[in-house]
Image 1 (cartoon, rainbow over the protein chains, first blue to last red):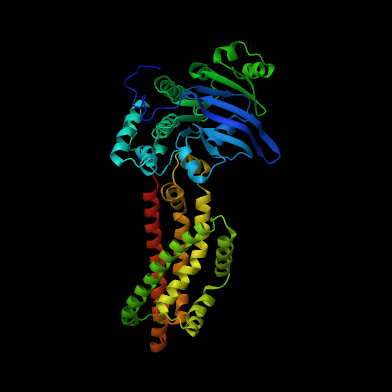
Image 2: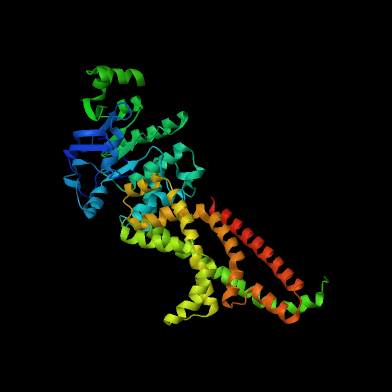
Length: 263
Length: 216
């Protein structure tokens, strides 16, 4: 871990963060109608790791993120986060376990009726019970980190896509999640705005112990930040390994085909 | 046909009385229809048929029967069951209820127009359901539907004379009374005709100003 001191979030959290396995999917099946996207998938991520999911569209990468965020429910199987059951689990427990997870979306999904500052403070105040002042102080630190100090009182519509996505990252981090899910966060951006967002994410990957689970088509970014790359095809992991290995010497034909198509 | 300014002058005191009643009906009726319509729209989203079926049936019934029939029913039938309100109260409630069955559809469309990503972001941030509605969904939905709600306000204004049928003396009632007592129809009816246009116009200006304020 880096020894940066300017990073405005806890490198030593109040409660010791778990080491070892943080996320576990067991025998998870997800169908949409007759189409089985995930078929008895076993999948786990260790705490603090940065894992990138790659693969053709429709291979189930995004579905995994959406299952973890509870935006979808599995048809079968169990999901465990930090030793606690997320699925199947009663609603009250889901709410508790879900606090450990944050997500950044392809389309940003900022709240257009709120200022940038309110977007970030809304959940810390109403969910975590932070005071307004404390939440705003933290929001300003996060906005400084993503380079948007001048935009606190603007509304999302007044920002570029790249700026909106950086606000969305700050909003997710304001909840101090243990896991950050990144769902094709640069896909909706104009090419010249991608770098700014990826720089922010690299910074977070370097300076925090947050676990990242990332679906992306930015292979250079994946290579930079990932500890592990998982190649998905038809709802199964067909190849896994450190980025150097997957990108330089892929073993599986499907991986080679995919990489030659996207690189 | 002669135009008699002195008849206008004689009618004016009655006109102001009628105008006040018309505006009362319009403002209170609108508020009831906005509030009740939102309640219907939200109840229709409760995930159980025990709620959506009765609410759907009642609102469908009210929407598809004439306002005039509803007015007569509330004014003449309810008292037989010992429920009595003044003519104005009954009229305001009837028109508010009737229009709530239109505004509920406006709200429904507005709520459905909020992108699903907003719900997902609220889930990802763990916002409680109530907070998701009050802080995220409804502010966006309402902003979208202000123009459509405004059209119903204008519509409602044009339906206010129906309350005459249950003895409410709004503008048309006052005009008719004056006309019958003085055998002068042209002047009072012309005056209230203009008054309707002016109120519609002012209401649409106010709504446009509100729309502008709501858009960032």
